[in-house]
Image 1 (spheres, rainbow, N blue to C red):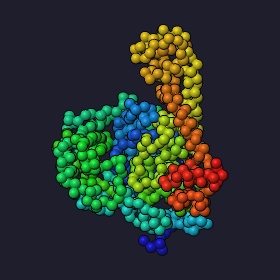
Image 2: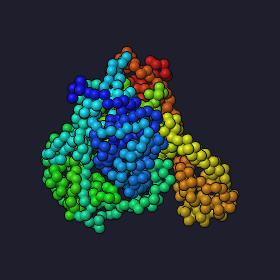
Image 3: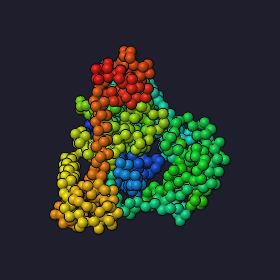
Image 4: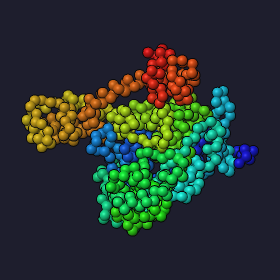
Length: 634
């Protein structure tokens, strides 16, 4: 559409482009911080959509949801309302990597999230594809002045947040069939990519995939292993008092030798292997054909059959994403144990889409080439609902803070998985869809799912997204942990023989002398609930019991005290480097002692600190020393 045909349709403070998980959190944050916000979706029925797995949380992702909640976001609360099944993963691996995962009613989640947007003061929800971003020349770089819909409606604004998901020039591929489309058969956004290039963004082409959806009727669950949730559901949000539902089971089955043979015989028809897919896919979430070819020694692969909702017969085949032709999908799915008579309701597909080079962003997620233009979610090269939502709330907070004339909220790597995610994308970039994993977080022992509030709630409170009531409740909890820990450290068992039989029942060594309750809790066989029994046996004066939440966190703090202290020392060293700030617009070509590669990379990324500079690929320890000397930071 020619710009002379644009017409004035209104104005706002912030325009959010895209209403997926990133866009919803960004828009809610801006509106709740007092700014008139408009969120645009190509189709309002796609708000909060889950085009792939209908679940929230999981390894490292559960931590992200808890962090979003601690900042004042909504994903955790909506997930708690729409849970079908919930469980804590990685219990056998220790508390550093405990992760909450919930199977979600996909449609209920969409309805709840859309309604939350509709009810939010200062927030308008509009259907429309954004095809243009209006800018004016600034002192150094252009700045945002508005957005334009496909109908020519112009909305003036002071800030724009792009959260376009997989819609930018989306192309769906199923075997040798491909067509322009967004996820789930929705319209793609075909016009905005050209405008982003015009503004100076470097675009990348990424790919993701999703499995087939199958009809419940025809599944032989008797041939599968049933997967139940936890007996007691632990909510994502600290504001959810309790989740009490009839949980729906999931099921585990496996591929067979026949499955693998069907895939191998048809691998020449796979777009991934015949070159017809242009985009780069996620290495850590391979398709079933990729798994069969890469791991030829594996006799079988897991497939989880999961419900899509309470009021639908659609089931999701977790672990079976594919872009093979539909006829091949029918054959290999029916060769899986328990699925011989199954009917496919929606075939699996791959989708290609445009993303930007996130190294063109600041750690606040604001663009370095257009002022007041922020980006969040899959447009930055990430994958996953939780990664998108975490970026969304940070982008929304920072867009609002900039309009308030305040410093941006920067979450560093020692404060949250959110900080690791953003720092990895902005500092190192990515050549494939980025997935959060616990192994990416070097300080994961202190970035646990149980202490997200301790790490981030103060930040959410300071920007205005956490209520006074919740903040006071948090302070009370922290005081309870401190008080009870001091009591355990200072309360001793004076007659150890009275509890030795109890300890022997627990498989723990009998006592020969007095010990503190904290020393007993440090034993691997003893949990916090046992301490109350020990106190009774030792006739220690009882005190008012603490909540399970306080007890669980306290147990971790006591048992892992030595490891936590060691990691806190590492964090102190890390923060020293993060506090050594670098000038925002410095030309690193003027430092002759830097390598040529370092000068190029530093000028491209413009790191905020020595610490961030040290994580840039191509910047060596010698280059860091040169920077320290030049800026007299030794």
